Amino acid sequence: MIRIASYNMRKARGLDQKRRPERTLQVINALQADVVVLQEADKRMGQRHPALPRQLIASETDFDLVEVSTNGISLGWHGNAVLVRKGITVKNVHRVDLPGLEPRGAVRIDLDHGGGITVAATHLGLLRGDRRAQLETLCDAIADCPRAVIAGDFNEWSQQKGLEPLAARFAVHAPGRTFHARRPMAALDRFALSAGVQLRDAGVSQDALAQRASDHLPIWSDLAISPKLPIC
Image (cartoon, rainbow, N blue to C red; front, side, top):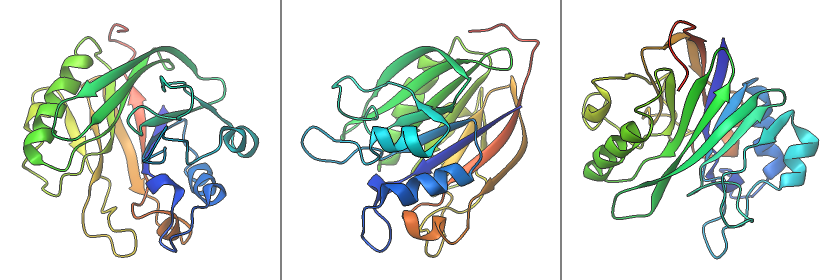
C-alpha cells in the first residue's frame, strides 16, 4: 500500500492573499501521505524561487525533496515538485516537456516501493486541445511502466471529455470537487491509475486550514501495488 497526494499549492498564497509557507506545510503534513506531488511550487517570475523554503521542508516535515529542478534554485520542474517520505528510495527522475501554447511540464519518478511504482506529477494546460496533446506525450513517457500513477491538476472541468488519451491504459479517478477551495465546484485534481495499481480509498482534504491555504483543495489516494508485474 502507498498513499499518494496531490496539491496545487498556489505558490503558498492563501485566500487571504498572504504567502505563508508554514501553513502550506501544515496542510501537506495533515495528508499523511508517502508521496506528495505539488503544483505551483515555485514563484512565477525571474529565477522561479521556491514558494516553500528548502530548510522549512527539512525542519517541519518528514519528507525528502526530490531534486527535479535544473536551475539549482527552484523546487520543481515547470512548478511540479515531489516530496517523498523519508525511507522511500527514488531510483530515477525524468523531466518531461509537454506541448502547448504555454510552457508546461511533468516529472516522472520511479520509486523502489512495494515492488516498484512510477509516479508522474503534472499540471496540465488551460486549453483542452493542449491537454489532450500533453496527456499523449505523458503516456508515451511512461509507456514502459506497468505500475504507474499520473497525479496532479488536470485542469479539466468535464468528467468525460479531454481525457481520451488515457482511456486505453488508465482509469481516471477524481476523489471530489477541489476548486474553488472556498466553494468547490470542479474536480480539477485527479489520479490516473494503470492496471498494476488498484484504488483502495481516496478523498479530498476539506479541513479549515486547507480551505484557506490555496484556491485548490488537496486530494489523496490509498493504492495497492500489484507484485505480479515487472518493474519498469
